[in-house]
Image (cartoon, rainbow, N blue to C red; front, top):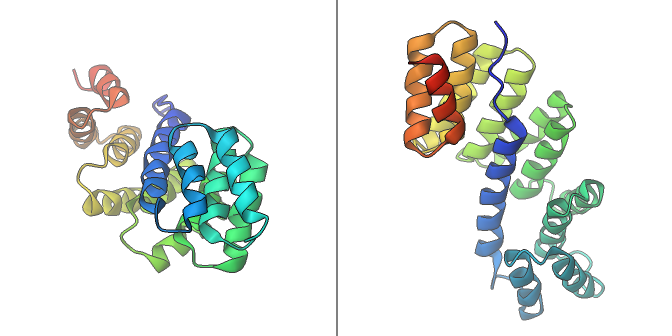
Length: 210
């Protein structure tokens, strides 16, 4: 059976924007006062201006992890993914266990369809912080893409156990269950994701469950 044509990149972008916007918000005020302007510019969506502000700060503090990571996120928002990757790698050269940089590197390799490499980074995140639901979700997606359905479901399950409001985990698990012929369970997942606000799940529910 052919997979459900769910716009995965759109969903991943949604996950990324929500998670990383919350991260930057959490970091505001945690570093030196001179980086607060850059953080605010990032949050306001003024990514080019934010990069310029981070550049100024990093010119004197080149190993400031927060500024390196946030500059990488700003590059990522502008579609300059190779520059973003360089900043994330710089963070990992300083702190190999940095959860956020490992998660971003996993996402980079996922988007480049290098799923084994992506899983390696998601596993690093999980080893450092086993409550990172986004890592389980994206590891599940990587396994799903490789046809490793049983392990994919296990990771979706953990993501849902961590947060029962993870609409993407319900959506993707439902899509996988449709492909496995588990229609009733799939429809339950689509319905739950729909209740949580997923338009893709609403469309899938209408197509497969009514």
